Length: 130
Image 1: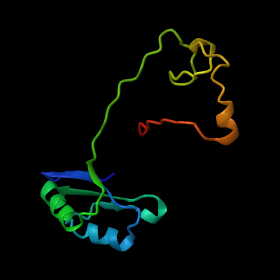
Image 2: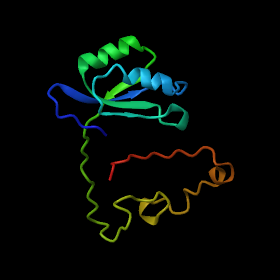
Image 3: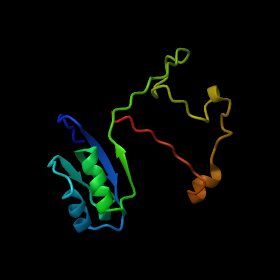
Image 4: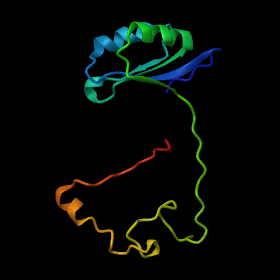
């Protein structure tokens, strides 16, 4: 992601509607003086613009193009690793499968219906960027 060293600028992730085309993306990018931008392509599943800009510039762009869905300031998040002292032989970075003996659910968590129709399955992923 772009990283600005200019005083007062922050890096913004701007989520735009999937219906936008490249012309809309270019029009939004024109509202920023910085050339430090990344334009995604809504038609290819990346409906966002990343730009380094002062807050006032961002506000002006949002007034001009109110169809923007949301804006998030890019920032570093830090997590603290979990310690699994009692399971030193664990090979899965401290993650525990729900159907292991240690979980108390051995062979009770078999998603037989989910296997058949691939529905009713929820997967949660937190990407640390590593």
